[in-house]
Length: 315
Image (cartoon, rainbow, N blue to C red):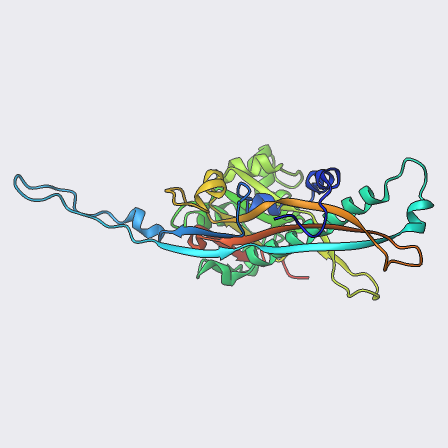
């Protein structure tokens, strides 16, 4: 069925290409391959089933022991997120030569759509309630900004607690700076006294024996429109340790599959963009530019993560 709002392939290409390197939502909760429908289902198997060993011994004439895997098929639906921007015809006519206001507007709208998603993902992943008990408040003696703490030993201990050892760490820029410059980390990486130096994400990941460290550097204005801007980090207040399987996020999150992963983002189609004439804009009308996407963030296996609240002293 054709859309009532015309989709422009060129503007859509711009909206899809827009990537803010400071944002990590697509890496924290990876997107699935585009879905053909807004509704989707995914299978939840309690992870403990994979670690409970039945009696496998078979007697000479006895029947082979039978096991049953109990799973729950869960239904969900993507949600629409979009923004419009009215471009008065006079602005279009007065734009500098070789300047496409529609393209520029599309890029700016796409950036806001991505920032909104970044905030949704950070609020979900940095919420202790997401983890079904796999969360704790970090004591002041263990915080990364305490020079007398031992973050290496602390994190190695926490990584061994979940039912499957996490392979991805997620934290904000302030938390990452405190961790990478901590004397214990600097000493372990550089072999010096630890009083000076900083480690890279790759070096710390190697120390912790995980695949990668994701550092969220995006910022957001916490003030309401019209008020003085109050810019703050989108990722702050903790550190998440997650087990991810990118194959599961791409496929098994929406169909039956044996792979498991902490979470994924279901995506209906791809991001869209378009523009159409609107005679209600100003005296001479104008063009209404729209950008949007249909997604749903899912934490499908909270047992595969662990959240540490206040890894640095709260401001």
